[in-house]
Image 1 (tube, rainbow, N blue to C red):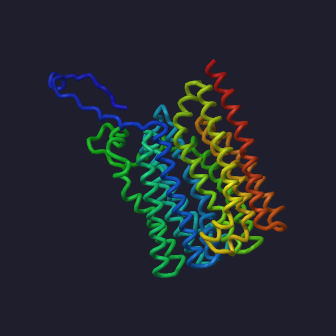
Image 2 (cartoon, rainbow, N blue to C red):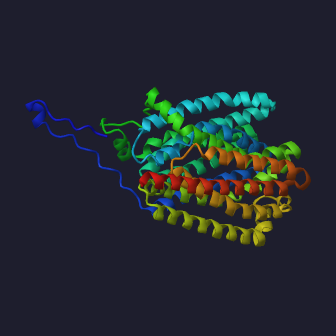
Image 3 (cartoon, rainbow, N blue to C red):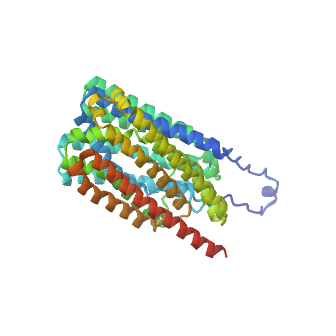
Length: 445
């Protein structure tokens, strides 16, 4: 906030006033949703195209190694990201400045990248695979920096800029991987191209964030800079304690989603892992839709909850849950009728032999979409710590289900285990939302 000081001298009294930067024009809820949806769906489509490209140009085993590298790095970076984007977007009272979020993200990203080689060494992976996984980690480091800047534009309800950045990231990662894979035939060099695509978005960040938003974040400077971290250790410590539960929640959620991949790699082989990863990725388009809706409504949910406007708060949630049910039903209908054809066209007939797995995952998609919406509703209440046991219970349910179902039922067992974990998280999330509203009612009374 700008401090307005009374002039103490005549010269100061007649000095021209410092102009306050005009606030960035905010978009409507529907426009924010459209942009977030477009950006996320495009990015997801490009990442799916990455798997299609690998499947067409190589074999399922190489697809499996790439998917395993993503599955290993994802929980680590989600933990260290601390879900700062959501904390930013719901910081309606401006407790922290963007420089604090950026500084903390820089520190945690460096920590994640330094920890990754240790994990790969302890796990006993080959040097060739470890090199691929580390390059993927570099790409995720760039994406982590982009994410905290997405949070900045989301806070100002300008998801058109974040959406365009997401589109750029998708196209750049797909192009980088495709070009280097075509030139070298090497998964390592293909991963370098994928990582470089995220780096392009980081380098162009000032342009897509915009000077109007930057000036609002730093009104004391005529030319505010984007990469200006504020290493205020007291503030960073408080922010870490606030956001750490969310980082743990995101890590547990990622472990839950990726648990089938770990157990497929352990009980089965890289080839089946590649087939499962490719099939499961087709569901990502639906996940991106739910993610876009959540990103668009989270600031609005936070405002309604903070103002104790519970009828509006629940009205948004119920609409979202209705969309999740409808989306799951549509996905089931499409996969039941066209699933085999789609898998044959996108990948190879070998993938189409597992069409029942795709149909099962389409049902799981509806459950996961509803769970995602309730997750945004929980985040809007800023009750971060209580989410940890919910995700831990879901992870345990998914892991136990994998142990029991994958050895006898293979990939279908993995799909069912995914659904069991998602349903466990849905029930826990609903209970947390109801509890948070009850507590807020008491406070407002």
